[in-house]
Amino acid sequence: MGKATTTDVDAFIDALDHPMASTIRALRVLLLAVDPAIAEAVKWNAPSFRTSEHFATMQLRRPDVVRLILHLGTKKRSLPADVVADPEGLLEWLGPDRALLEFRDAAELEARRAAVVALIRQWMMQLT
Image (cartoon, rainbow, N blue to C red):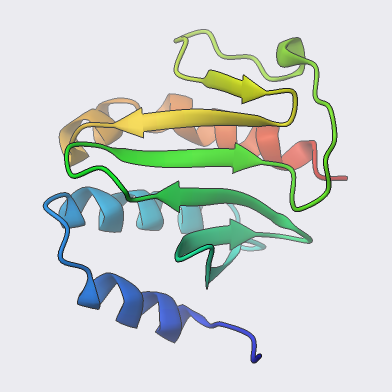
């Protein structure tokens, strides 16, 4: 199987019939702007983002919210919850190696932009 590219993600998002398409696009732009080392692919039937490993994958199952699952790649690992500062309480911890962010619309994402970028940067630091 070939490596997915940004073009594949463009095609995937363009083909989506999702009521939150504008929020999906805004979240994608935000993630790619966090660090030039971030690449994207369609993995697990959704846009997924990586540096050395995949660390964030959108979950698009619900029509009323866009979810971003933060994870530590495909290998099980533990991450102490206090290693990622979350002063706004945006993270919902799903396990020792994954957390969830939710956005109900693009305005909410924009209002939380600085906090989300800080969380993503901290999360990426755990990949090494």
